Length: 276
Image (cartoon, rainbow, N blue to C red; front, side):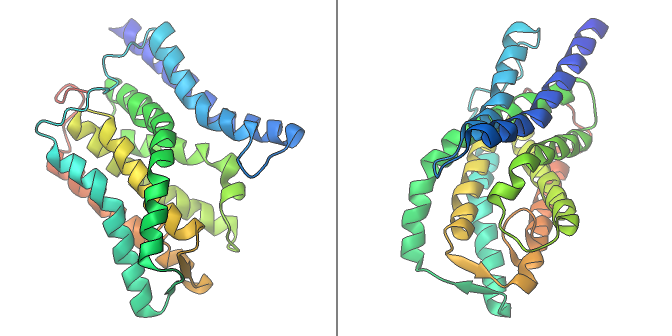
């Protein structure tokens, strides 16, 4: 058992080093070969490396696939699946509604146009989030569970590593006039809050697919709202009213939902009490 734990700990460290470095390697590649409107080779390295590392560790370095969570496990898991489908759309509607009521947010395009854009975003988001969630909730979280760490600490650790993984491309995708000194800490808190929620739907269901679905719905709904400019949040209120991870309202709602699921499942439960 000690040998197995040592091997798992070694592989978790290797995985963490790969994911924390792959984005910076990708940026170096982009500096050499350039980028275009469709992305870049560096971004491909950044997205693919965590999944590729997971496959190598599970297939050839002793981790195995027993705790991956590939089976959907629909039976008895209607709650985590419904939460995965509905949480981010409902949260975004709530926060945008508050922003409209307080004069923080403006609607720039029609709901019908948004529905069409959202529909177009779902499939690409689903594919992208297979790469992400198979790595984060399909590998890192269950391996930390296996090492016996408290469940909430596992989620926080995953959130920190997941958040730091975004850093190399943060300046590429984020358009803000806010200082990174205040933006990044708030973003990291938001990533940890999401990691608790994603981690709990993964843990409760015993399947990685609710986390894939939840991530897909969050990206397809919220990113479409913001990046395609269906809403505009006034700069002075963006720290509070953005429905994305760095928004204070979003952090509060996501954090409360994650902690509710954690308590509902039983804070003391570990991987030995729920099949992964």
